[in-house]
Length: 278
Image 1 (tube, rainbow, N blue to C red):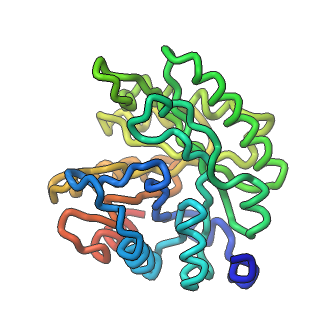
Image 2 (image 1 turned 30 degrees about the horizontal axis):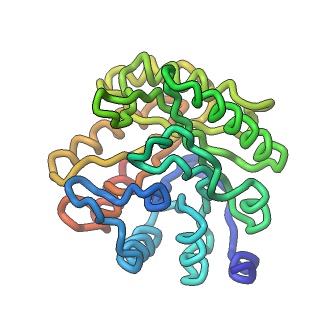
């Protein structure tokens, strides 16, 4: 693995377009294997790798976000040359677990990303105002941002205001006010924001995004999320992304399941459409 990482041909984070198109595949390490109604869609690793290699081969795709096991496979397959490689840092908040909000850093450490010559890290920050444990998550996130900045490595912070339903299921609040608060909180973490990027959802009402993105001057990318199994859901996602990508601080997309497992099964077409939105 170390030899493959040392041989990898690297590239700058941003090229002349100043835009980023990243394919995300860090869901399995959190036990989040579902796509729409298919609960174990991402469980077949060979199938996932085939879809990733296809996506990475398409023009305009800049790189991949994943955990170490997937990135190691892609390294050995030679699929990461001249690509942006982002290591996923905290995957401890397993989907559906009672400790889901205790999202500890169980993935790439800053020193791992530096040692392997990867290009950036990504962390998830879910804050529940009713859960005292969120303070621990905030503090560990801030220290991870500090460690990445000390190495001059970009870190993409994905913030949410979250809460549990009466049934105990964790949900993310995508209202304009909640996304605004999450961006404000994430932007202020750590001793420096010099290497901090934001990874943000499109709000419930896409028309609110212009106002929401005024909360921070940090560069941002849009996340995809699970758009379901219908072509209509896929098309609606494209339209939401299209509008938000026009905003001045929004620099690209980081999208996973909706491109790797599109409703019609055509990975190439889904990826090419997303690239075209940039």
